[in-house]
Length: 240
Image (cartoon, rainbow, N blue to C red; front, top):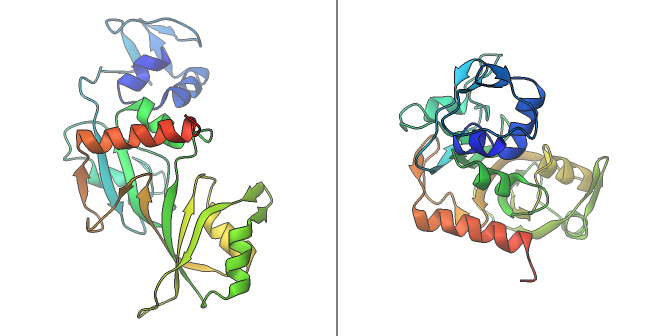
């Protein structure tokens, strides 16, 4: 059942389990249960709406602007990433999240297995951020970030902490981290003694946002999707 929901681009298999627990999925008119088998020809519905099988798995890269929530709908009426998906011709869903006030690379896909591999905390696919600070980073701050920062929900370790060359505007750091706890980069920088005034995700695994303008979307090539799958495999089996 979870595999069919994932193949239909509804969500990852992991998220499909929660939808079934919430009794939001039916099969041939009956409420679905975990472990239930289903076939593509069955009448599978989510919240009463038919789930259509997706023939082609796709992935898009969005350069998310600040002020946009990473959902397809928002009960508060704020701008959402749905405004960028309407012309794609396929139902796709965000892979993970970027905070309302954060910017940069966000993937949108109907491939539940790819989404799960990129989001699963066990796989640790690295993500790269450029953060602007409210004051120049001193050696003490850099040392704390490189050593690791203790937060209330566990320690944070960056794979790389690199000051960027000075230019007009706030001082910046390039940070690489292989986890995705809520606002973890902002919280870690604050715990180390500084404050993030702007956060831009510039890369996920081997792929970067490049020169794609904010608010624009482009489809990933088959080779780029293969690179993401390879990054998931490397993170899952680092010694192989």
